[in-house]
Image (spheres, rainbow, N blue to C red):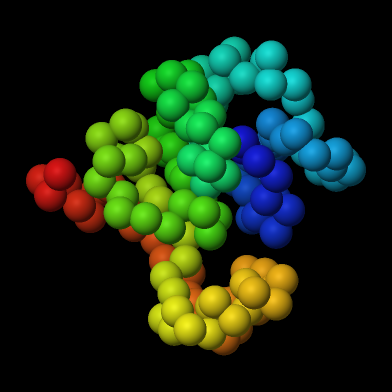
Length: 140
């Protein structure tokens, strides 16, 4: 994982014994291994599934990360920041984009202006979405 997604950890651990996480913030979670970004090339190149935070779009690190994902069966970009048109991402090797779709922008703007977060948006004006490359083959 590039970025820590605590709620996903139990589901991921149902399918694998070891989870490596690259995270800049301090994370205390004894179920996973937090590793230095200096180890990223080696670990990503040997990974079958890679989950990448949509925040990598904002901090401009996605392209660098994608250079090391060639062997992976699945490369997933996820989180609220990942919500966008997926075709350019599919061309770069992403296999799934998972984010949110805003149903009511006015409510979303109010929530954000009041320092609300993703959970409030999901409860009041948004829904989770998954866009899979295999469902869009030939469209890009």
